[in-house]
Length: 247
Image (cartoon, rainbow, N blue to C red; front, side, top):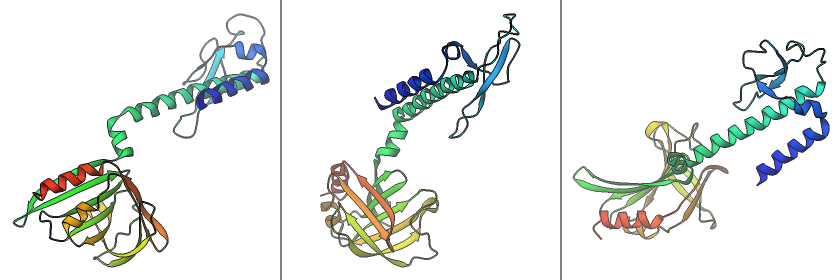
């Protein structure tokens, strides 16, 4: 609706500002410049990923139609037409991306589930990845043993620091818009150069029980937000952990 109103407004302005004959002329893109019977009236595009291209109209002089002086409004009409075509093409491209399942998963997030043997034990984990930020709940498949909650930043560049070693860092953690609490997290560099903050959880059972269907997280270091994300469908993660731990 908003796009339609904007396009109508642009067309309306062009109609008020340009002479009738300028709008009536059919303009077209001529990427290699004007050819026989054509003349260039302006440029269109340029910036924000749109290449600048020449705009032409049929030239009455070369076509044998007698003297016809170029009107300064011709270039404006062509530019407006080209702009509208660029808007439509960009809208179509964005709509195509929105309809791509991979793009939707990236923007809306998705769960990944892990059940693997490790050093003679079964390891259980659930991870929610959204827009380059991951929340990973993981640990042994034993309800009474301790687990961990890790926040991983795959953005380029990541906002979570990537130190050498594994230092502890004080983090202000806000969950579900509640009052922030200060915790000490282990900070390290993870897979693919990601920044990682890991929090210890007393038991796997407690970690599983704390999972709500929708949850949001914000982590700050020295007043700077380094992670801000949220998940949905947390019941899927809770059910997987319950099954993985044979509960």
